[in-house]
Image 1: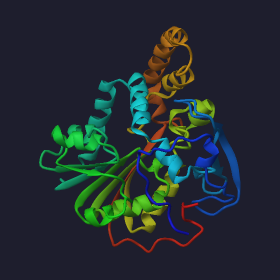
Image 2: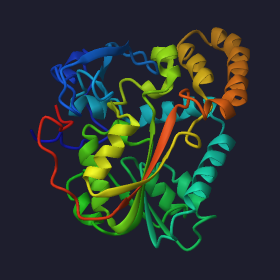
Image 3: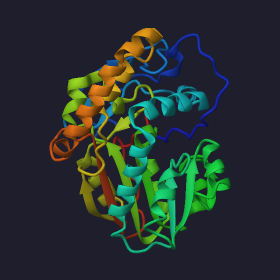
Length: 344
């Protein structure tokens, strides 16, 4: 079955109902084909409170978590409008201060400095290219490029944080040919969960790598214990924007099937200490401003608890993210047969 075509982030569609934005519900897992599905979560849009309820199902056999029914191409574009991205950035700024994000980018770059010095690096979903800016401290001779579907990537190029700006997705028609075998490193920090077809996204990322190059993928961990505890208020559930949350074992097996050697699987460094404070922020995002103001001390306390517990949570099943570093050792394998495709 063909993959869903990539879609732009801006559309003029204004729906009367979100039902028109949903594909038919599927009865099997898009990763392994199992029919043993259970409903993990039903939630509305926590950021803008648009009408509609979105469902995340989990596969009882492989653990893959996915939106079911999934957004259509038009729905995907609608919920990724630039103004929606700006609101998400504003919310994130309240939950994770800029200095915390800078420290996170710098720590990730430091950990990755164990890689051989790359000549060229593509950061996928780079946004304002804050990660490449931080990584230049540890990779001073590396040329950093950025890929993003918004005009933020072009602004980042103008401001000197990256050298080349590519506007679109890895699976945008023509992008694979344009980027083929150009890079020694491709990084995807919290991007794969947005992809309608994660397998197609991984193949496109590997196609951009030279033989021996490294792919870095960082994702929310659906096995995080706080995901169950917080439910709809766990920020990485991200409805309706997050379409797939593959567990570590699935991602590792997929990369190995595509001719990669997995070098690192890390759940410590990628953990972001924001689970409780983000839950409070989401819960009060659309209440009266006076109530939001009253909740400020609660959010401050939650943020303090997040930071205090972070050293412990990083070493437990409560870590909220993971990172995989894989080396491309051979040409891409033939795409696996159905029903493993993630297309609906």
